[in-house]
Length: 570
Image 1 (spheres, rainbow, N blue to C red):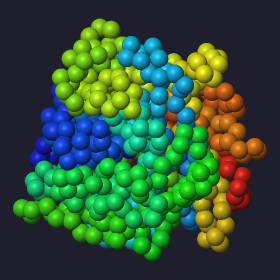
Image 2 (image 1 turned 30 degrees about the vertical axis):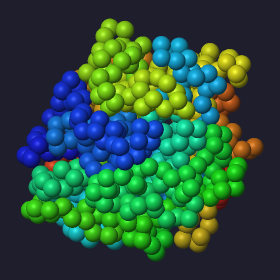
Image 3 (image 1 turned 135 degrees about the vertical axis):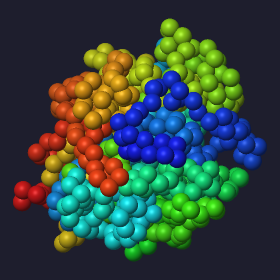
């Protein structure tokens, strides 16, 4: 998810300022030390380390910075093509139930020359289901109170004199219930998937340009994350809050314990329920294939908490906090206002985080010998590179995971995706070079009468402008902002298929996936649609910026069919 920024360093910068991708891709050297920690050994590193991981590592697992840089001036964007779900009925903004099929990897393993199969870890470090949450310490511009589960929190008017002026919006966080693929250095486990609740908050104040205190910036960064794996008993492995994780030398919360963490086999079908409880936002998962289940609640008991926004403090502090959904409904107006993406209830894929490299300077360091994606030589984004730490159970290849600045990595090649070309689906099953697509149903929500209902309409949204530098993309006017992004030979899209017999489902990849029902024009240009002009807080006023392409459909073409239809025009 993208964050819109108006500050760089410790001073306010113009909202239109964006840095070039050359200097922007210089990652912190501390990553090497972090991933080489003897406390957990070379064969097991944290999926989500503590500290200022979001600011320093540019991992693709964190909330994006739509302005393109964090407070240190480092590039931090991520590519997140998304599917949004809308309904004006109460309950649609704070409860959602999906079915999802965990994708299988290609039968053929990846090869260092790029000629083998493409596995899920090369396409996405994670995909996720999301929802907006209250966090009174996250970008607290007008109030330090956030009453959850109500549309009284909608403030998105650009007019400073309006009662619903965007600058009066309560503090907001965004939860991503993330799924992590197996097989490489970013894996949960060598052969199985796992999942976690990750809640992202913003330690700044857009109305004044203030950042949090220096101790907090050093320990947890400007973008903070609560993090907990989904477990069998619903108890977190360690306190989930960002400050506690940063002070844990063993990164206990970020290393999945197979005795506690629910794992999924490729091909498993899951029922995923995101909802509110008195103790906090909760995720329940039932694996319909293995009949195992797990949960995680963003509660005080599980160590969730806020990083206190106190710019004048000398020591960073946190407060135990139970996170709850922010809104009652889900519409174009239920936004996280510091984010470039406009969504509340959404599915998104994190793409653009794998590029081949043939030699590295050290784990987490830069590429020293260009790989198959760079026939002309090394690029500035060939950093954050790994070779599996010598783990023989993983795929022994070398690659870089920093965000693609020139869009030439594996996720931007048609041959990498299921259905990317008409020929990617033609091979016999044992010879297929592409993985199966992730497939999921449209969510259902619990209405006021406790009936399951379908969402009324959907939208396709891609943060392509947010991840494109200025220039060529001018974020105030939209001039030079292209869809697909410049340099991308291919850009994946959503299509519909049959998930269960007589039950529609969504899938992600190319336009030619076997069993496709509708590919909505078959290109990113057609599917994600026109530029979106949205207001953002800019001091004591607002500014209109272009951070996304968005295409809203006036209907839901893929209803889950397990629930009642919303037939009242809402």
